[in-house]
Image (cartoon, rainbow, N blue to C red):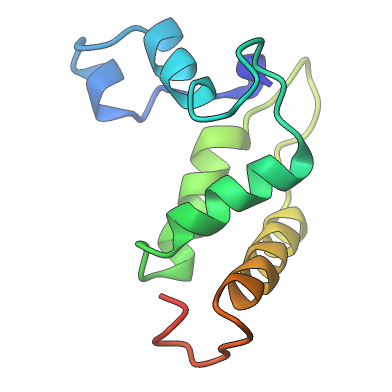
Length: 108
């Protein structure tokens, strides 16, 4: 997973305040496994929590694409459909965490 993590657009990286390794390690430290193993549910929960503070689906989509939508060994980039699936999954998790609230303002 660390290999796919793109830090090029992180301000601390492009301003020279942090190395790629420091940024990736900072991300991985947010999860319980010190070896860097992250389950799908942990990944979704992380981005569900993060999405609460993001007011635009477009910005959130860009965040996902810029962080994870990199070409890996000649493979294609993450598709818009894959990002939409992630957004749908995150919304569903968020609705679960807000006890079924569907009001868009409560979900932001």
